[in-house]
Image 1 (cartoon, rainbow, N blue to C red):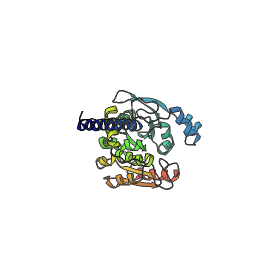
Image 2: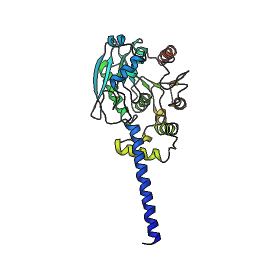
Image 3: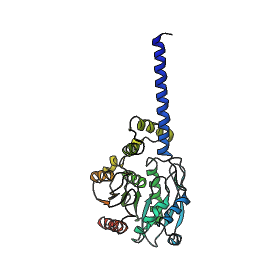
Image 4: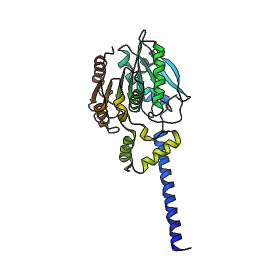
Amino acid sequence: MTGFTRGKKIASGIVAFIIIALFGVGWYFSGLVMAPKMKEYDETYRIEVKAGKIVEAEFKALPKEEILIESPYGYRLHGLYIPVAGSRKTAIIAHGVTYTLMGSMKYVNIFRKRGFNVLVYDHRHHGKSGGDNVTFGVYEKHDMKAVVDWALAKTGPGSIVGIHGESMGAGIALEYAALDDRAAFIISDCSYSDLNEQLSYRLKVEFGLPSFPLLPVASLVSKLRGGMFFSEVSPVRTIESVRPPVFFIHGADDVYIPPEMSKRMYERKKGAKKLYLAPAAGHALAFWNNRKEYDAKVGEFLMEIGVR
């Protein structure tokens, strides 16, 4: 064997090792995105009660109906429907990643006291809903459309539906609104503007790693595992096609999803819009740290767009 041949074999082995290593690391990070560690449904209830965000007596007294909605992908979405007698308007509230509908309960009274029925539900692969993985909107936006269909059918012709989303739930709501304009409004609380950008930011903050070549490989693996490229999730890319009014909310001190992401989407959104940067609030804490002001600003927004 010549030195050239030996060198060629060594080089080929090194290349093969690098490819296998990259694929392995990509598989690991793909799993962090598509199959993160979830909190159990009952666990989230206990967490919210302990934090004072759910008052047990009030929760038990709510006239709620447990519901199952068929996803277009063959599984069922679990939810709670909380009606207000005679109301023809419904607020759908969507929670963040790894959590359950219990994280949405703190927002319920904002809408109920304004005469809204409220529908909270577990996203696919969360809580009591089905679904094999998390796709940050690739599949979830179509699930949300099924939830909107259910709510409109429940209250009949002439009724309205609005959507409030927190974190991933907000991103899903914005992506849904780009494909279906039936929602009367969207309230987007601490949404990401682009998944690739968000993952790149978290990769640097949490692991001290550059996005290339890891993210492209992890994205390819995610497509093979669960049908999603990270680049498919980009609310900022589609925000100009969102017709319903949007109220962008973000904690001014959010270091998990930077508030600049909501600012950028607000700037690009056409038509009716509003922006509120909640003071002294980290990620998903805009309401809890500013309850009176948050409630008042949601009320102002609804009045401004003519939803009463």
